[in-house]
Amino acid sequence: MGDASSNIIGWGRERRLALVRSAEPVLVELRYSGRLAELAARGRGPHDPSVLPRLEGFRWDETYAPIPVRSPHRRRGPHAAADIEPRWEIDPGSEASAFIARGFADGPAWRRLSDGAFGPGDDVVAVSADLPITFSSGESAAVATGDLGAVRHLLGTDLLAGNGFEGAGVSVAIVDAGINRPFLERAAGRLGFDEAASWSSATGAAPFGFAVGHGTMCAFDVAVAAPACTLLDVAAFRPYQPGASSDADAGPLAVRLSDAVGAFGHLCELMVAAARAGRPRSLVVSCSWEVDTAHDHPEGSPLNYGCNPDHALNKMVGQLSLLGADIVFSAGNTSAHERENAPRSISGANSLAAVLTVAAVDLDSRRLVISRPGPGVFAAEKPDVAAFAGFAGSAIMGEAVRDDGTSAACALAAGVVAAVRSRYPFDPRRPETSPAAMRAIIKKQARHVGSQGFDHDCGWGVIDGAAIAEALTAPPANHRPPDWLNRAPVVDLRPHR
Image 1 (tube, rainbow, N blue to C red):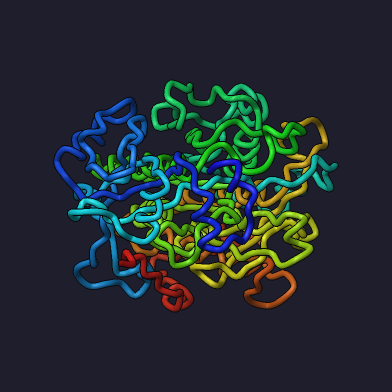
Image 2: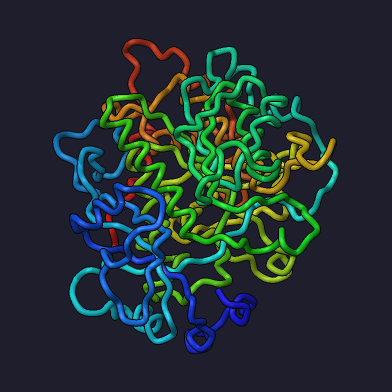
């Protein structure tokens, strides 16, 4: 987004249109064609843009490989009483029904796209804005208020580990700014590293070879509860150091939603490949970031992200969940300006019912003021749970400097999910192991803080690994799923068109 528009907050539609530059990035969903399928199969690298349909005033990005989109379909056959997933699924054996590509629109082309005028023919299914992304770290390098021993005790990691819940056999994808393996090998030596399944938005970047920063902090915090998990370095964003003093490392990133869409596309293809090969596919995805919706397009525009279920990222997140991945998002952090006024709602992918949305509390279980409160745009009952922040953990910025914000809280919660999955793996034949069932278990076993029930500060309470382990450990042979599983809400992830 151009400099002239990057600082506009709360613009009206006419004002926003007037500020469009000649290089406005746009994500375009295109209907299936054999030539597109061949292009997507080639993977990364420059491709021939002539394969893509010609749109007046629009230039395709030949470095962005088309991303497959698979349509959900209604599930067949009877459903178990414990089956709380939506009556929709994605068949991993099916081929893509569409592809997402990236391009740049000039002013007139952007206006046509924003009005839903896609041009002649039926090639274009939908268009999506390509907005900047922000991380969910704290605003300063403040001194920590607790140590890892206290955090482990509060999470119940001793009971988790004592019952074999340590993340063994579970893959955890850190969708972030890259991980530094030597740092983690020194600080958390039992972790596994899967370079083959890792991915980077930068062509040629070596997995786990990034500078120590935000992604390394999140990976370290995942290992607090899941020290035996296997990490995937999904480096969608440029390197970022929380609390960095230079302007280059602050504010909205020089990366966009298209990078996150590419990351989720990669993870979807990993799940499809595992399913087709009959391999176990317990995958936890940790996302300690949010989209800067101050730059979003007006509600009702086809380019809108924050409240548009048809946006490319929201579709890809829903698709990955239907394929069986547990997706954990931070609730996001509020700025000082927001706290003085009215914080915006949790929006976009962070607010989807298909993800576990995590708020941040201190070690006394009090919500941190920077933690974004609910409700959510898509699912009103957000955040789902809270986890801890403000503790001396990774020390990526020096001893006693805290792992802070909803970034740290999200990663801790993702570690708990990974720990549980080591003994409670996802099995598509067992609905009680679905991602929706996992979210229901976590919310049911959360430790209430403040109120008995849900609130928009901490959701259903603070995540409690010990309670989850107790609820799942060695059920009797005649065990029946608890009644609360049957009463959990059904989420409809059908495309809204």
